[in-house]
Amino acid sequence: MDDATSLKTALQFSEDPIKTTYEWVKHHNKNGMFRPFFAFQQFIQFSFYNFENPYPTFLLNIFIVLIGVYLFSKNFISRKNILLFYSLFFLWPYTYDWLFLPSLNSKWGLILFGISLSLKNRPFTVVIKFLLGLFSVLMKLNVVILLPLSFYSEQKEGKKLYTTCGMILGLIIQTSFFFYYPDSYYNTGIIETIKAIEFFTIQNLFVVGIIFVILFDVFYLEKNNDGRMKIFSCLASIFIGLAMLNLRNSSFAYLGALLIFPISTYLIFLYERLNKILKLSNNYGVALLVFSLILSNIFLLNPRLQRWSDLDKITSNDFTSQAVYFCEEGQKMINIWDVEKNNKNISYFTLYPDIYENIYLWTYNHKDQFRFIEFNESLKVLTNNLYVIDPFCEESTAFLSAQLNKCNVDYIFNNEIKLIRVNSC
View 1: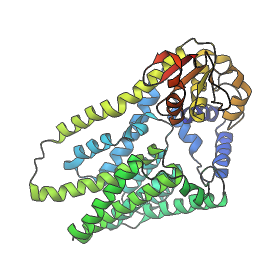
View 2: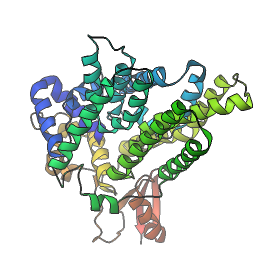
View 3: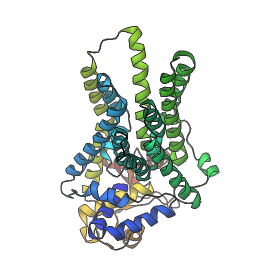
View 4: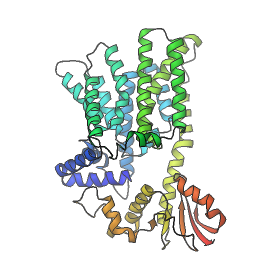
């Protein structure tokens, strides 16, 4: 749904940039965050979007992400380890969220962060460095994960901490809005947030494992002060990232995309020290990168492309009765694209052009024309009912196991995502 609302924001910005910026600043403020560049970010991201051919938009997003990744590597990774860095980057599961979800905005903050650290401390650049540090956090709060790495980089090179101070000011501003708007989208209350944390996600367990390795390293292996400072900066970044991921929503694993930067920085530093002892060959870099691309394509990219293909085939199916889609946000998203493909008279992208935050207005006014409806627990499973079973929606897979597996059904579409019709139950 984020991509659809971001695209609508880009269209509105192209018509009236000042009003669109104002409305979205107001929207994010009451949600507990200050994001003055949000509308402009969407306009840049979706300026080339074409409903008949969206590929240029995705290619642009990949290009933007890789610019940020390159700038980070320029500041923190030596040239001899660059292939190892990119291998780790492409093996990180949430890399492909970043590459193929244009609405994820932390990439803009990463670019500003990288540019700021690349600039030399000169009289005419210090203000620019400070502002870039500030704006990087205002682009997306997640970028504050990189704050300890900024501190390490600037102090190591003997620079004054302009980027770091800018990021700290950005954090103060965001925190002020967070606490000024309690019970908002971002600030759901500390107790309720902690109760909702899913501690044993794969990402949490992996990151905690990395933390234990780092703690063992810093207390028992690394004795050099600069090395310990580098390790502590990586550790602090990982702790911030882990805290933000879980206090926001631990099930939103893609929010951990930025964690790969402190993790890869530490792992490469560990490899450099081990290599001094083990004298490993440096000729495997290209092979390792090719291996990581093949592996990540098989297990990370292809399933995503298959999912998109399944959704396209389901919305292309000419069934006339309504089908239940269990997860609320997914149900809104699939209806937006289904309407765009099959019933453009009520297109989300053309109706209500002067009304902001209009997704709920559009949904309310046109829900009777939607082919995909919400699940109603009070209704029984009846003959000819249609259900979409999406493995990314646990509610639907649980319903399949508990209810539909007891029924006689037909699979109108049967792949990773399934469209099921009940014959009898």
